Amino acid sequence: MSHEKHKEKSKKRKSTAASSVPSETVLLKPSVFEDSSVDAPLLVSFPDFPSNPNALAFQTFVHKDEQAHPQKKRRRILVGQTPKIEYAGDNYSTRQYCRYVVALHDKNTGDVTFHETDIFRPSTMVKTLKRHEAKHIGEKNMDARKSLGEAFGTRKRRQQLKAEERNQVDVGGLADIADHIKGTIDEKAASLPSRETIRAEARQDRGIPPYNPDAASPAEVYHLDDIISPAEFASIRVKPLWRARHQEEVKQILEPIKVTEWVRSRLHTTLQRKEDKSRVPKLLYLAYLMRFYGLSPRDLKSEHLASRMGGAPQIVVDTLLNRFTEFQEDQGVKAYRIASKLKDMLLAYILVLCLMLDDYKVDVAQIAAELKIPVTKVTTVAKELGCKAHMGGKAADGSNSKRMALVVPLTFPQRTR
Image (cartoon, rainbow, N blue to C red):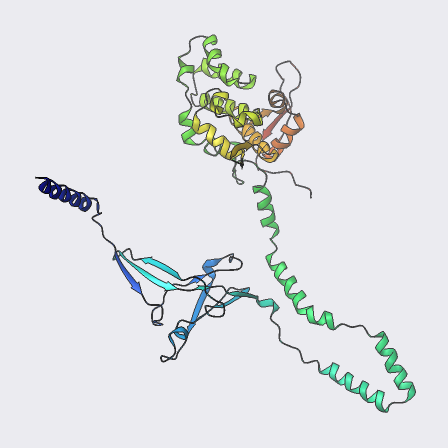
């Protein structure tokens, strides 16, 4: 009875093992390295990875003698070049301590072929350093005349030759490196960026959101999707604000976020008029940006960062961390920090959203007061965005406001070196 049970269990294990094998099979094929008719893949280790590997083409050379020893039939010479550098290497000049195998999968047949191969470590040669030896005929004639003068010349001639030798400048060293200097100058000059390229890189290095340099109106300069992604926009909960019937309820909802007066006043107006409902998530996102701007490094280390930002959606928190912070890990301790350049970029995003919400004008003095930073800092970043001073208007306390407006055609301040 126990023998029959054992056979039954054995059958179950076999059936289970058979059912776990995937229905799709792969055929493995070996490949022989010594067969020079087969173009096997090669492994190449570069001392310095090429800047444009797609433009680099290699040729391989093999031993032609069919009766050669198998070790010689394995030898390969690999050569290749780019417009500036030549590569040359082989698989036999240095001792190989490992054997390498490359597997190639054919998507059409499903076959996987294993190719035995060696590693090539090519040396590099800069083309401009290759020179042909010059035939210094003039120098040879001068040496011959000097020898004749010392042997058969008069006393006065011999003294003249010695004076010329003392006053002669040795330019041999300069002649040897002249071609190298010229080649280096030509190479550096060719690699120098153009004036337009330098200007384009400077625009990219301004630390501002993506912009349209050919915009015909301020509304076309910056796009909302570059400030708030559609996923972030959809994650912001606005229904509780629309359902609130009294100002106290709105104040209670906004209390955890600690919104500034700039955001609070515009939220109040928008909720009363109930015209453009898309302004509410924009204003809430601006409140999250301002709240994030004022966080301390200790707040960034907290695991409850979302709650510290007034219950901000997690996707918003993750986006702000990825865009405006640097991640560091020291001895297993993870930390985020906002470098000064990233903080300026965060301020630029805040100002762009303020411009979008306020007819592309912004009171830099009010924003500076609410973020507790100098007005000059806000003014500088606003100019980097393409804003210019806009006269007119009164602040809440009746004083003249310092407003700036986004104008087109878009211009940026010139940077001094």
